[in-house]
Length: 116
Image (cartoon, rainbow, N blue to C red):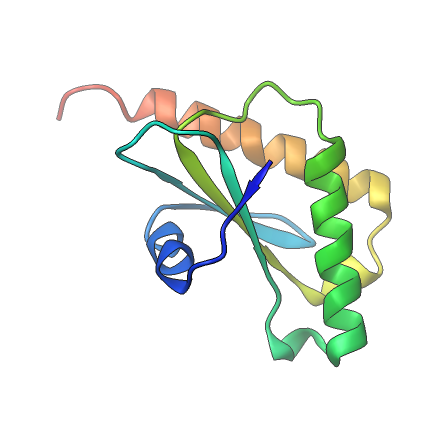
């Protein structure tokens, strides 16, 4: 898994598709280069102090690392924006929400390929 590190990449992903979940918001953006999948993780200060923000970030990273989903597409940047609920929601529920968010993204991309 490659990581997003540049602010410009996070801002670009914020202009893409957004899928809300209880513990996070998943943002996705297709890159022009078609390279490997990249993930970014961000948690604002609204969530809590540094200890709580880091705990949320660690949980989200682990969800992505252990995810065995096939809905992750090459050439996309994904950003998970952590919410305060991620501190209390059970780990299994966050994992289910992540898989569901990826499926909704996939369904949304397939549905938007038609002509307008």
